[in-house]
Amino acid sequence: MYAVTLDDPSDLAEWRAKARALLMADVDPAQVTWQAGAAGGLFGSDEGLPAPVRTGMPAVPRAFLGLADTVLAHTDPRRHATLYRMLWRLAHGEKALLRIATDDDVAWAHGCIKQVNRDMHKMKAFVRFREVRLDDDTVYVAWFEPEHDIVPRVAPFFVRRFTGMRWSLLTPSRTAHWDGDTLSFGPGAHRADAPSGDALEDMWRTYYASIFNPARLKVDAMRREMPVKYWKNLPEARLIPELVRDALPRMQAMVLNQPTIPNRKIAAPQKAAVAVPEGSIAALRAQARDCRACDLWKPATQTVFGEGRTDARIVVIGEQPGDQEDLAGKPFVGPAGKLFDRALGDAGVDRDALYVTNTVKHFKFEPRGKVRLHKRANAQEQAACRPWLVAELDRVRPDAIVCLGAMAAQAVFGTSFRLMAQRGEWIDLPDGRRAMATVHPSYLLRLPDADAREAGYADFVRDLSLMRELLV
Image 1 (cartoon, rainbow, N blue to C red):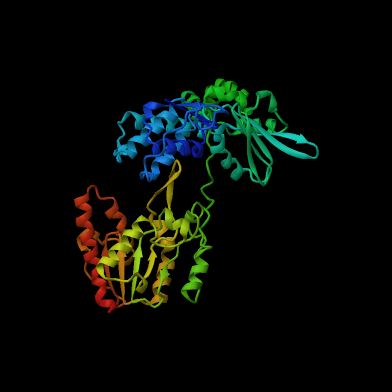
Image 2 (spheres, rainbow, N blue to C red):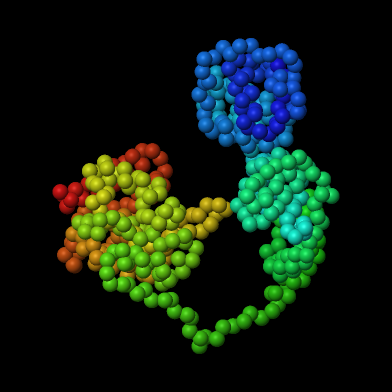
């Protein structure tokens, strides 16, 4: 038997180095015990490991290191042995191990990850820093009691959030300190080391009471998301019993109050008109950054204007930017854009020969947790963006237009156009140009199975290949 001692039982680098040494010596997991302590070096006894029997480290999936890093933050004393057993199995032929969700080791590891991630979320949500005067300076100190060893993993979040503050985060197992330049860690602290309150807490309680909505109170859900054990560290916690008790009378009073009826003679404010400038595509792009013709600019990161050759013979019009387009400020750079580029290549069309834009220039979405889900722009929002599309076509003066998706097709052909019935054929427009419509590449990504995606992609490539005759 080999006893392996870890100075820091949650440190990935230390565990990885010692697990690697064991694996290179071909030491079976059943022959190893793991322990935490500040002495003993690699082994708890004087007996050394056998000489390495491997000439090279077996390949291990990168995902395993990410899994191990989070699992090591868990407090379960089995974590080191289980992770080494998983490493051993990966190195001895079970390369698909991490994809077997029903495997005992894998299921246990993912259970640990879920608990650690939840503990990290709770720390971010329920830590409250309190002001402490130190000589002529101010330091903010917080006390928290996590279930797992998460301080090194959560402290960078507070650095990003409170970069300009000096603060200390105290827990029973570790402490973290930020002096404005350097993040450092120390041993655990005691509850008495942290202040119990400060002058700002009365203001915070006043604010919390003012935003409390009794009509939306769900006590069971609140206790699940903000367990009672965290209340002792939250300045607003002392208000919760009273707010819960008074919620029903307050809600009944809200129902009984008569609503305020707006004066029908007061006209609703009008949206700002779009002033499309004269000049080049570059002038249009600059003006569009400040467009306020509808409300889509408010949650969006930026305007996503068209790009490409300003003398292109073909303009390709999509529907509206997605999440990655909104972040990058460029059209068709996300998953749908990558599929579009691939299809252009298979169709023998060079994207650099095109001008590519969208019907709507801002990303419309609804938040779902940390994810922004695409939401279709309504008719008013499409109409607000139409002057920009008309101006782009006027500056580029293409011979032909290719519409990707129903929104773009109806912007060009009218609302009676039926995409799936009329796709893949050139249609003469009243201004002398030709236009053709096909599906949006995001439609292909949503198809339910591989056969449908393959057939849909082949039809999409066939439609795009119609552009070749105009580009030769």
